[in-house]
Length: 571
Image (cartoon, rainbow, N blue to C red; front, side, top):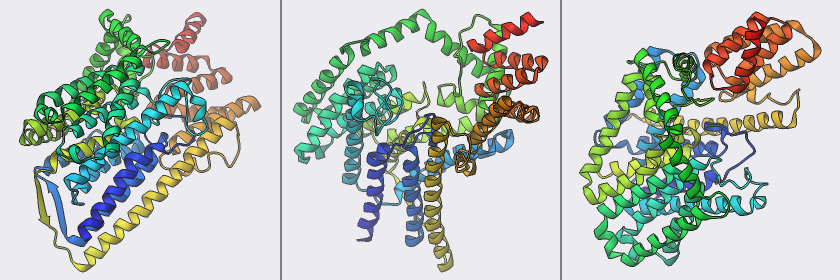
């Protein structure tokens, strides 16, 4: 009964994670991480799972882990060491990046402690499919009748965003749902599955294909095709045994993809064609090439430990400005906070040391896939394709924590076939201490997430209701995650009110704060505020210096280029 209760606890939390957490929404300004509201309950649920596994480990005095688990711990260890060696000018972003990685690794290890059986694993995969299907329903509603859900969920015209607020993040999630559906069709348990379960797989395939092609997502379409081809090649014998259901699934895929790619207006196939033309003409490709060239130059500057976690935007701005001066005709994005490639990102911020940790972990996963055999291992590899491919062209893990945990859950499926059970002898006092710590950690993390949700509401109300005084921003200024952003908003409000009331001293105070802030994190909005401050103070030399720095770091930003011309004329 104890074994059943612990697996039930884990299953209920994972169901809540994949099925319920994405549905949580409150008005927000978008962005990454906890700026997106559904990430808040996702991390709260994962906290209960991690601390529940810690409590369980203390109770059973056993620690279950995969073979070569040390390799999975190399990355977080070297990440911390490289961060200490390289330093970071932004301790709070550095801290949350550490928590993000460590939390993910702990989530992965926590899954091993709950004795999840194969049948339960497959049920959880059905839950993920159901989650994908719900997102297709939301996305279809956003396309054809957005007014029906406008009061619950953010909409952007008729653009399908699902619950993720970003089209490509939705696309990779739905692509994963399609691959999981075909994988479940290939499993022996499909013969005894209920009619409702089989219908769920088929409608998820068709509706997901419709949305992916409607969006015109290259990574979504490509990963779907690659994943299906791998499944057809590696699990052909199993799929042949369910030939009718496999054929129905493939027909559903086509039945969704064709109308999705040819629907009225600018179709998904037209969008895909336009993107392909841009690549062949060198427009999109040249931007990518220039970005990767700048990235390699940054890696060459500090190859071992990198530039430090949280320092990307500062060093990228300086290097891209230098690169643009050397190559004035080079095409670059007007604003960038991520190189749109997860491995390149870690090379820049964490250097070869952190990159080596990632490669070691990937090596262990590949080795585990090989040990699973071509049929089982190929099936698992196909499941990982959509999110893994997406991470090499964009930033799904930072936008959606759900993608991060789903990806880790799929890795768990691979590693769980070879486990080691280690005895952890604990004294009575140590056992009680660990249990108490686990309970307090659950309470603490829940409080933090609730406070973060309130802080987010605080900021949204401040910006949308245009209130200048208390109680707005009071909660956000006391929240560790949103404190820096809330401080910027408060200082910007002080600047505007001081300019309006002609309070020169306060404007000077703002310039001191902004100069120091820009040296650490040169956000585009800060340049705008500082230029306005120097314009009010009639400090033309400082104003033009700030404009010059801004245009150097953001050479493709048209407003900065326009006012830079005025500086040239005045001199």
